[in-house]
Each structure stands twice: as structure tokens, then as C-alpha cells.
Length: 115
Length: 110
Image (cartoon, rainbow over all chains, first blue to last red; front, side):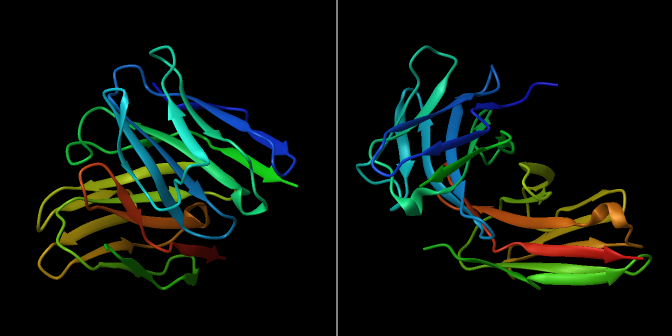
């Protein structure tokens, strides 16, 4: 069964360092997303991406964040200068077409720990 | 801004009992999703509800959607330990974004 895969599963980084979280969405999907979940809290939307550009982003997704689809299969989230409060589980998701027509499928997540 | 609230936040129930989790949302939407999350794991899609009056069932779980009341329910019938997890509802507001509820942590005890 097709699935969204994320790497790494766990990343520890020092405050101020740049991190790149990687995702391989399901191959025929067209919409890609990043969400995050701080430990014990709800899942929060960060950004959606369609047709090689950001279609929507949240207030959390400030200038420190960027997304890219560098090669037609990977979808990356970059945090330029990590802060302690960026520690969270980051989920990548993809959907075939508009979310109104089908559900988003989530990857297993990358746990980011900023020390 | 779309707000999604779930209650209860925590539910401890005995095996064999029935219970309902509620999901209320603040603005009009006819697309609602239920996900299950086990500790430290990803989000598993349970139900997709795309119209008013939609009802879906899978095993001991049944979900329904009332778009006029802006309410979805997840009903658990004759709970078993394997259902212990956190359940999230998520509402599609704008074109490409899901807003998640606070989650309901379900613990099924013997």
C-alpha cells in the first residue's frame, strides 16, 4: 500500500542550527502539507504546497521556514535557525487532489528536538 | 478563524461499554475527518465525512456529520482495549488546510 515516508525519524539539533526534514509523498498525489504537533498537544497546520508553490501557510510558518520540492519526488521542510520552541513532531502529508475529495495521508513523522 | 473543539479531552471507559466523542466546529464546512493516533505514532485515517447526514461505520466505530449543527460524533460500541488511542477530528476550512480538534485520549480498561 502506498505511503508517505519521512526521514529522519528523529533529529536532535542545537539551537540556531538549520535542519531539513524530508518527505516522499505518495507518488500520484498533487497536494503536500506539513503539520506539527508539540508533545501532548493538537496537530497544527504549517503549510500546503501545490503546483510547485505554497498555496496556504499558517502564522507559525514565518521566515524561518521554507518548503521545497527539489526533484519531483521529495518534499522538504527547512528551518533556518532552530529555536527551542521548534521542538515537536513534524508530519508530512499528501492528498491526491483537493482535500474536499479525499483525505490526507500522513507520514510517520520526524521528531525534532532542539537543545 | 475556524475553531474545532472536542469533548471529552480524556475518556476512561470499561471494556464492553458504549460512548460518544463530540466534535464541534465554528464555521461552515462539509468536510470532516477522523484520525486515530497511537502514542508516538502517526495519524491513521479512520473516516471521511463529506456531506450533511453522512454516517460511516467501521467495526466498533461509527462517525456521523451534521453540518447544520456543525457537529460530528464518533460513537464507540462495546469498547475493547485495542481501541485505546487518541482520536482527532479535523475540519477542512479553506481550500487546502485541515484544522484539528484538541484530541480525545481514550483509555479502555478491563
